[in-house]
Length: 163
Image (cartoon, helix red, strand yellow):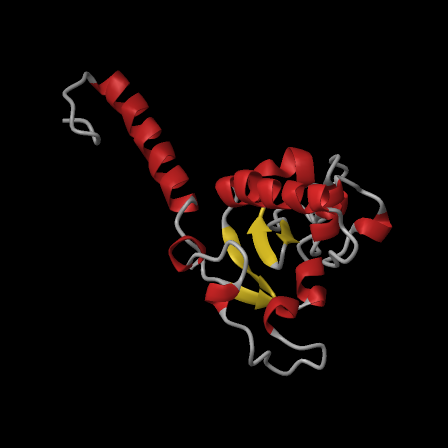
């Protein structure tokens, strides 16, 4: 019997074994990772500039592992400017202008906010694993816990999907 349960001659068995191993590796890479809290300095370490290092970016305070899209987010890639930070405003405005690469959503139009929600749900949450949250989402400016933070009150928060 082959590793996947079918009877095949040895040549094809080795091919099937290799395919099963690749499939198992892919499933393992999709297993949930521990969720953690990132400071701005910590998130900046995952900006796609170092080979072999994961590539992270945050949208709406949610940190995504975009490493699987390194052709878009890796070093010298078209959207690398979005990585290593919370780029919520840039995503909403579809802008790579350094002034827009921030968490700040003040002054965004209703159209930009709708685009942000659409991209957040249909691109980032649909495609990339969540690895954590920015500390800004949970902590006050002075670093003390935001006692009013309730995960269930956050936009698009779903314990099943995010933890």
